[in-house]
Length: 417
Image (cartoon, rainbow, N blue to C red; front, side):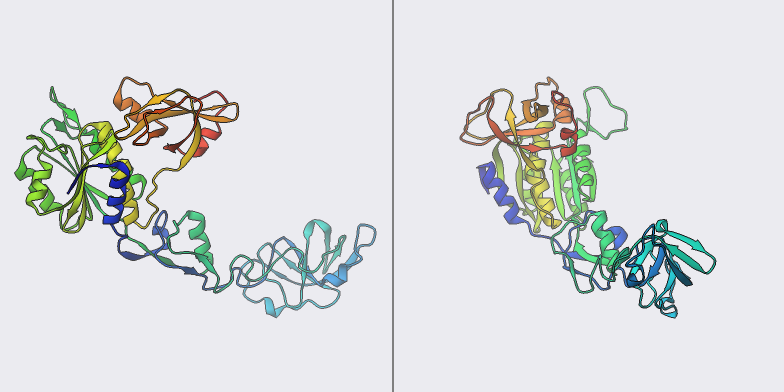
């Protein structure tokens, strides 16, 4: 097992050790946010027949080529069709004739245009038309939205509500997608209490466990949780209990490897394959990673900032890869640095930051909150000072990881954050 590896090496080692998971077939109403494991091909045309885009009259365009407000054309109405009518072929439009149609109605045989009702004056058994209707006017041709046999989506695409709607229109009732891995989060510590229970003096609530589960839920990843005491037998029992159904293990606390930090000793007794322990990153340095019966096992530190950063930068990308998603969790944007920040050239620093839109430019400010939990909760971006760099200078354009939706920034007024 490697120790004190650089952050980039740890990231690469993590992703190299995990593989995209198994697949499953799901129905349309279960697909939102899932990743396609197959190419999606349309099974039908949509619309399946040519239909009217407007309420009006299906006509021969040639009959109205000279129609206008000063030259109305009278047509005989020989029938009516509405959306969903199954018998359009029972009606035929001959020269000098029209069929009344509603939006979505099938076109009668031989009609090549629809004149909107706003240009028509209906009368008993006939209609007076005051405008032209060129061939194809107000007609949604068969297969306009989807052609049978057309490729609609590629393997690896994330399924959005709109794409799922397109699949439905194309005759698909479901799709094969990658399974979402089931993570088990085990928090350790005699001082930690489950939220909702009474808080004895000197104890604290298991906020790390709650935040990890919230991030997993945000990305559609199911999880189980367990809070155990700092005893080897309790930790081992929890792991063995969840081993049959867990795809990934995430532990919180006991990562450093001191006398009171028991996780590494327990997993080593269970014959895990250690890949690395301790990463040159701050916060998050004590993080460890390995495989237990070929299942990814993340050992996260207990300090909230370290716990969160190790999870976001190493564990969550691996989970997304298993899910078939792209492992880059957060988009990277460019912003100008509002003030100089300093790091340690011996490791990669991650700095909580907030964003400001000023004079049509995006500025990033390092967060200066005295409370570490408030800083975690209110950060909008992360400034990254890579290993080997000791300073990023005020005014410099830098890449930052964006932690909030982009629309929250761009709809702000200039000078606000």
